[in-house]
Image 1 (spheres, rainbow, N blue to C red):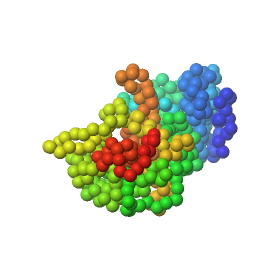
Image 2: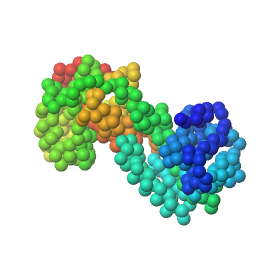
Image 3: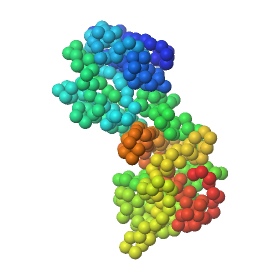
Image 4: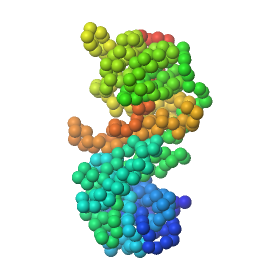
Amino acid sequence: MIPDELYDPSGTSLLSHDFDDRSPTHLVVGAPHHAPAGVRRLKCDRVADQNSGLLAWQIAQAARVPVVIVTNAEEEDPNKSLDSGYCEAVSSYEPNILFEVHGHGGGRACFDLEVSAGSSTRAVHAATFADALSDQMIQHPILGGLTVSADFDAIHYKARYTATMQTERWLGIHVEFPLMVRKRGNRRGLPDAGERQRITAEQLAAVLEDYHPAQTAQWTVGGADVGDTCHVAFADLAGERLRFVRLETVPADRMVDELSAMITALGCRCFVIDAKPFRTEARRLARRHPEVVVLQYFKEQTFRTGSETHEGITYHTVSEDREDSLDAYCDLFTSSRRGVIFPRYLGGRDFLDSEVAAHHLKGSQKVETLDRRLGKMVPRFRKVVDNHYLMAGNNARKALVLLSQGRGPGGLGVLPVFGGL
């Protein structure tokens, strides 16, 4: 059990605990800048690595090694002097390696996880650790989408002036973890980016119902996120809620034939597909279903329908600001709206263990990004991440908006206006 003192927002403490009671030890895990979530600055007036101590405790417990955690450091920066109480506690275990857990907010880091041994000459050790970490993370439904780097020239957090990384007493490995990893997990251990997690596992659990995905239907709307693998989402309406009835993947080299068959079998009235990167294939699909398929772009500041002409053929288009578009989709998962429904079981497994859920959790996280037009850091949805089913679901939402407002290629159809989508 994690000690209560690590959750105290006003207390100050130095916690040293050995999970296997052996000394000397090969490895010690440290967290010199811990504070519980919500505490932004330490008493020694530096930025807090929120919840880094919780992560350090869990790592040490799993590895059965000692852990040293400073909560809300008061008078000194614990890892900047080898005479600090933190460093003395680490030294008492006589470790060969000190693994220090830190945290960044996403604004300055060049990668999700940055690993450093404090200098370019020790970078080979950091790279070995980073490779091992990547190998462990790649199979995880959430962590597998994170970037990891130990390239000393490329990372931002180098720990160049950190005493615990520069000493010859041990080899120091300094790892900066993003907020989503350090936030307390939910009941399934899925990471949560806190206030920047637009869709949470709890919200997903609240929109699950017992029904079977469909192979055929009288009518649906649909959306596709296109890449080497095309992720597809079809939905109908249950009351005024967007109910997803089919979620699957299609290889890009077969997407025109397979998507065309799905559109027909599911009675799709409007289907929104990314115009890029496979514009030729998207246009081929639109030629097969000219009264259904709409090509989607992220290039306008407001939701806008239009058309484009290529080689004498006109195609329907829709464009929207990416942030506004994803915010509108994420709003459907809030407790006040609950405008979507997913099947409780998908492919013989619990929905929350599925790739669809993982893509919604990863894709709905925001990070601080420099807005060059505004000249300041602003929260934006993550881009380089496995978010494909989130994007496909959002395209299905757009298809319903177009259909219900009579702005799609097939006109108004049979649907009521679905306000706020």
